[in-house]
Length: 381
Image (tube, rainbow, N blue to C red; front, side):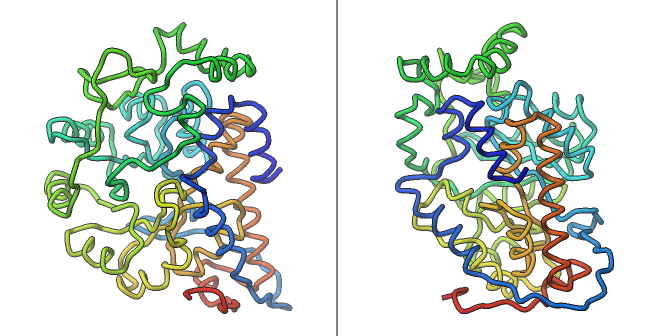
């Protein structure tokens, strides 16, 4: 199996609205095709007669040594892919020795996830309007043992995802003939996700929302939570002052923003186009990594995500000077196709593909990847 096969299995199992929510981009989805083209444009020159010794895929970042250069990215609605999907992701991460970043818009709270799985948990936060709404999340994360906070800063307005509205899968969800028929066409999914949730006490809820706004996925009877209007560097300073652990800023693509992030106290940045789900004319993270590394130097943690489908994609991001790579959609495809075991299988597949790519290129460590010979004709223009 590979990511494409897992995606195909996910498509067969999930209702169209759920599948397209996790799979698609925004507007005309040109950012998705562009991102894929930029990965494909970077070609690596193989090396031969290098001995074929075993490769070391371990990575060091944020002061910790880890066996693989992977992090499970924050993905909202994993609980709509599988019942209690966040826990399945966490347990898979634990078994593989990976960090798992819990999402603000998750359907299980960081408290519940940490109690169910002793993985290394990070916590991703959006700032909602009103400090009284987001500050308590920092305390909850700290009390759950979180040491690394990921502040997502690339969504000043909600992106235009027309297909979500057509599928009735905007936020909140709305019932209609189309999505009711959609759900009924996937009875195994409906029994697992909706049926088991109802048995446990009702429809899935946004578990991190303040109690007064803890809406179900249909958003009935409560005012919607909104992102902080006018988000700026002053808000970063407030989070930095309130959070005593490590802080990463997610969604940076410009070198000046990266430099500012570090000057404001960030311990690292995540180079990300939000999975190509926000700005449809965005550059690809792969193209920006070298400039961001040059801006930050070698001592600042630089992570990357968006659109990883193969181990060779990971190789290319590492070559471009990322310290490690976040995995989002690939984990959800694995979750849909096989639950916790499916997630673990996807990580194993990506690690195997990365290992094979390293072998073909004569690389024994991640440091060697940065010295690999590549065609750069199409990169950075």
